[in-house]
Image (cartoon, rainbow, N blue to C red; front, side, top):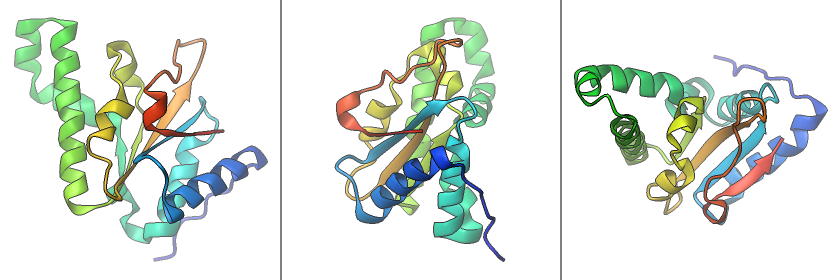
Length: 166
C-alpha cells in the first residue's frame, strides 16, 4: 500500500522539518508539543510524519484524545452521575490518559495525542502526565491548539517538553 501524501504549506514546512529531526535524532525531553492555532495544520503534520515513518500502521501511533476520553467516560457514566463533580471527571480523565500511555508504550516507542480540547476545562497538564511515561527513548507528540477566542493556550510545563510552533 502506498503511503498517503500530505501537502504542506510554506508555514508548515519549517515546523515539519523540526519535528522530523527531533523524531529521527532524539530530543532532550520525551514530549514534543506541536503548538498552533486552529486549522494551522498540526494534524496534517503528524499524519504526514506517521505515514512516512510507519506506512499502513500509522493509526497504531495516533490517538484522538477527545474521542478516546469520551469513550472512557461513557464506560464510567454511572459513577459520574453519582458523583456529579468536576473533580471526579478530571480524575477519570487523568487515569484514562495514563492508561493509554502506559499500554501504548509497552509495545511502541511513539504516540501522538491529538484533539485534546476536552482536557482544557479540567486543566489537565498533559506534558506532566506524559513525562512520566515518555522516557528512555519513548516519545509523545501532543498537538496543542491555541485560540484566544476559546481560551485555549499552551500553559503546560514548559521545562518538560520541546515546543514546535506552527
